Length: 126
Image 1 (cartoon, rainbow, N blue to C red):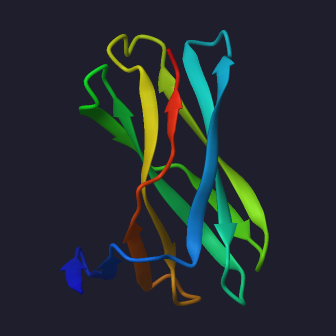
Image 2 (cartoon, helix red, strand yellow):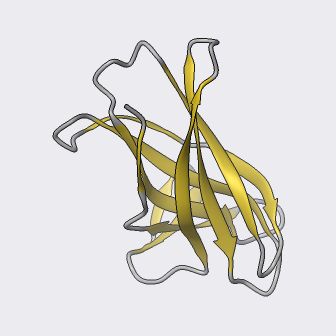
């Protein structure tokens, strides 16, 4: 466990009860942004609220250029939900997006978080 700005983050690289099962590129919305989705699944017996996916935007060599932290409000037990991400069309070096980790609060007041590094899917965007 490590402390981070007063919030405890448990980090693990093993299996996670919240998983990223798939991803897809949704296209260019014509508004200056490229859009995509990662689907998360909740294998907990309780709802998972404020589930965040760390999305790395990668160049042609697979190097991370930037990150985003899109979130979905709630995922019910045994269900899945889409976490939508966007990136500016001006990010010309970005060719794909990869789900790197998932995190969610473990306390109802949001005071404690679980964060799990994952080998998530890679979505080609260019």
